[in-house]
Length: 254
Image 1 (cartoon, rainbow, N blue to C red):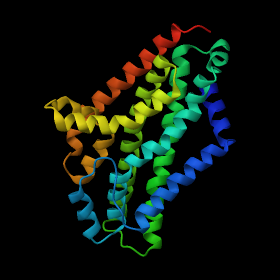
Image 2: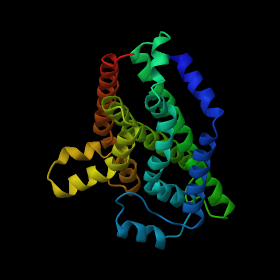
Image 3: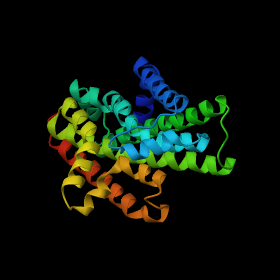
Image 4: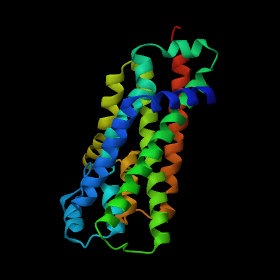
């Protein structure tokens, strides 16, 4: 598994697509911060107006970036295609499995690679927010320690929950053997969950609104202490998708 992670990391470092994804991430962060804009999937107009009319500080930039960070999902989908999607579309994953790695090791290796990539890109996203805010001469809005703690919390939270959606994408990819189906499913997931929540009384759907968790923390509607059920459900989804993907691959011909 570790050799596979190293091989995937080496391949990404020597692929121009990786640097395009990084450039898009940085560009999104700069535009959001420099123009004091707020947006994202299913963010209501009142929230956007509140941020637009407030005095922007570094902390305001971090919070606004979190509301807009759902856009990261659509940029990060390109990572999904690079790390695992291409191998399934070209069926080269069979060569990796024949080399001796277990099915579980293969899936875990791919997931860990994507998780590390997402965390690094998310860290870059928030780091550029701070840098751009300081270059614009804005006040911190809070202590340096609080800014550092917020940076770490938002990076881990947003990166983790995006990776959960990617794990669902993996099982869709393995099940349907279609990169297109997996990418469409991941892109529509946040929208479908919000729409279903609005039109039904299914309270349990809130635990599947992965990209909305960090947004709720930012808006103060979800306290850190109440985060554990969301984390528990997310880990459960990870286990189910990883085990399910492994079982499905075992039934595929090599």
